[in-house]
Image (cartoon, rainbow, N blue to C red):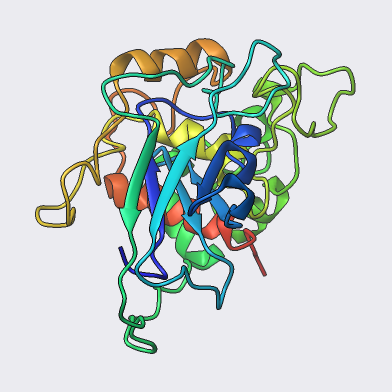
Length: 271
């Protein structure tokens, strides 16, 4: 394993974002007292939890490391990974711990390609127009107050509670870590795709996980959610029609989903 590797864990269910934290995974060599600090990043599009070392840190060379995932206890507040509806992680066909030995060589520095720039607000507006989302959600009085026809409309969504989730004790106020996930969820939660209602509405669309031939480098990289899991989202908190509505496939498929998530993750900035 490279000493600067990113550990990526993929799940068959959407996670409860507040449980996709560093307390839910332990990486250590030898005693657990020597636990390595990891920075988690949960991606709801791929249902992936990526664990990174802090910038500049490296694992020790040629050592055996063990990664353990935390199984929640009976207390709902206990640490551990849970699905968005509170279902705890449990042992299945794959183990909840794994071991690996780090490379002895120093990692190559400066040879990794720079990550692609996040889409701009104008890029996202154009994607949503091509996808057909703005066919209905446009103008001065769009359905549910949700405009998708240009940067000004997108800017107005950031930090504003989605009407279909506005069921909390304080109408119009976004809630942080509510008892029921999805309550008081912002349409766009800047820097947090996993708590942005718009992303979930789009990933439920027909064709949301369509991919271009050759665009998935490894098996499992582009697997769509299961039918049962999509049903749980609809029953849980994603109400009404997806975007675009039934009968219209999402133009760009998985590429559009990932672009939308990248824009949100980088702060959902609009001029």
